[in-house]
Image 1 (cartoon, rainbow, N blue to C red):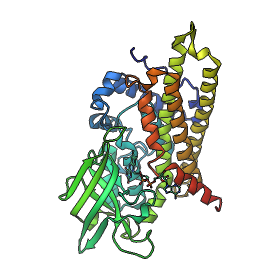
Image 2 (image 1 turned 30 degrees about the vertical axis):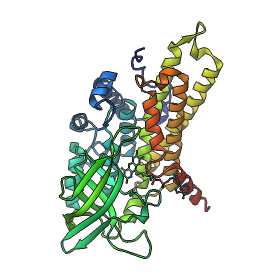
Image 3 (image 1 turned 120 degrees about the horizontal axis):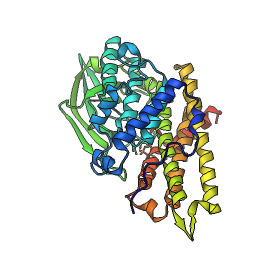
Image 4 (image 1 turned 90 degrees about the horizontal axis):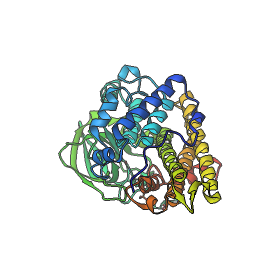
Length: 395
Ligand SMILES: Cc1cc2nc3c(=O)[nH]c(=O)nc-3n(C[C@H](O)[C@H](O)[C@H](O)COP(=O)(O)OP(=O)(O)OC[C@H]3O[C@@H](n4cnc5c(N)ncnc54)[C@H](O)[C@@H]3O)c2cc1C
């Protein structure tokens, strides 16, 4: 059985909840056409992802950058388009919906945010310009012994004169192999409080002493172990202040969580549309399976959840756009939590709605399920998001 043609966009009819301006809608439509042209068929996606194993295709990403989309939300004086986080969400949602293999986008945008907030003028010129031009970046926080309790990290980045010397092991680093540089968060000082003494340092991928090894996962091998042995870079590679890394990380959490929400929203919408297209076509017992009440109710519930997710992402995006310096720990965690759970549920129910074909690799539903499962783990697990939301209620 061959996979159905790409369904028409937004079968769920939820994208009006984004309340985009005419210009933003035009960008969304253009991006959708771009994705359709580049990755609209199964054959194209197989080719771009090396048979479903690697998910950042540099030439496609650079093409998007040349068209101005990658830097659309970066400041104009650094080569960007001057847009805001709503524009970024549109970009992330549409490219995820369009199944474009540009996996480094989310982490690169997180790095861009850190540079915008804490970079020197020179660093902003250098890094934001490169990001707008299509260079990919990674961010390395997690360690084998420090996952949810990330502040307990042990990798050392010690200042020795005009240099920083790094030793340690980071793990799960998305797109470390594709990244031109890795933004490392490591311990530059042993302090009483684990949140103190952390620093952010850029490490170019080809630096001597860096060893990057892919991790095999149910979603390909895009995440990597990164080993640092006497990796030495000049102190000009420090982002922000030595010892101020934790505060700098926290300042970017709004954006990081919303980025994950927007990407998962695109996948949720795609999983919904593919499922709906399938149950409208597939016949059993002489009827379209979508006409069975069990199926209709399921579709209705998922469409309702999807609309909630769409509203939440763009509501939080607008709040951040209105005041980029305000921390929204509750709302940003809600967006990450809700949308990743909705996406996982839609993909899981999508597999069930498609029966055996939902389980087959020939269709994309099982791939969406694998992607969405991961989203409830990275960027702070959903248990941690619930903890943060609870804390905002004084619990
Ligand atoms: C696909 C993928 C991409 C990733 N990309 C990156 C990346 O680019 N950069 C990076 O630095 N890291 C990355 N990570 C790492 C990710 O951030 C961690 O996996 C995540 O923070 C959880 O840490 P852990 O895996 O060590 O699990 P643990 O922290 O050991 O957690 C195991 C379980 O215990 C639960 N748990 C832990 N503490 C609590 C608590 N206080 N209350 C309740 N439950 C708790 C967790 O929710 C989880 O269910 C990625 C991970 C994945 C899977």
